[in-house]
Length: 122
Image (cartoon, rainbow, N blue to C red):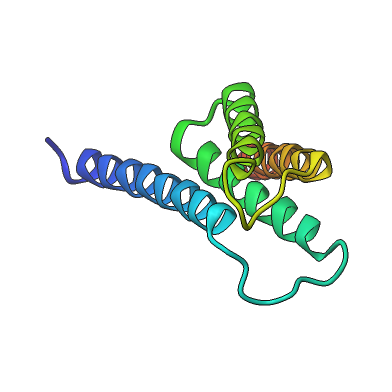
């Protein structure tokens, strides 16, 4: 195997590992008890950015927009329902909207960056 092929494999493994770690961090952070008060609406920004980063990492890992967006959005829905099972977190439909919107923006940013890079290369 060539050095270039090994580098591609390592980068792919890095992308998938970072994606999995970020997803785990979202699950843990979403189900862990809050220790500090959050400004009204401030948690929506956390959801939006967190799932945007998740989608960017997902696109880096698999480069398939629909599965990444659907997967991230479904994970956001699952997290909200899992919060129903904890005594210290609460379910919010607007959090699911922020999750899906952030994931959509993450996918869109990846696609726009890829398009810009292709245009620049040609």
